[in-house]
Image (cartoon, rainbow, N blue to C red):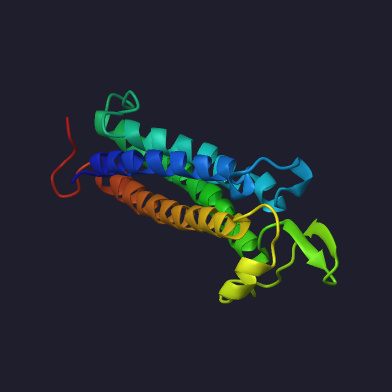
Length: 201
């Protein structure tokens, strides 16, 4: 497969991943599927890792990759293949932006999973208040702790863990795909659109 065609496939793959990440981030504003006061939403949700990092910042590389197949950049000095090589080279910059965006989402998600959700829980066994009852991911391997500590919203722990885990995995996939495009773009810039087969015309 030529480098332009491969980049187009990456673009098609990134679009649904962006949509999934944006939807996950939006759902996190409704812990346990319920509407709560904004001050009781987990802090990391407000960092918009899924909306900005794996969403908006990833849309630009995806659209650029989709356009590479037929993009000759108007050629340069009358040489069409030169324009295509420049387009592939510039795609590496957008792939780098994608890596930064997805990396940001991965970091936010990892911190959120480790910290746990913000919820209503008993302090000293008597006072019900909002906060972060878990620390250093201690709830991840303790089902009893996950199921009993948070009182409200109901089901907030699996909701939090599931959605941030999806964001973490999607972000890692996006990082890998953009890294592939960095390599693909470099090969396309050095060898032309089809290495070993000459440039397409």
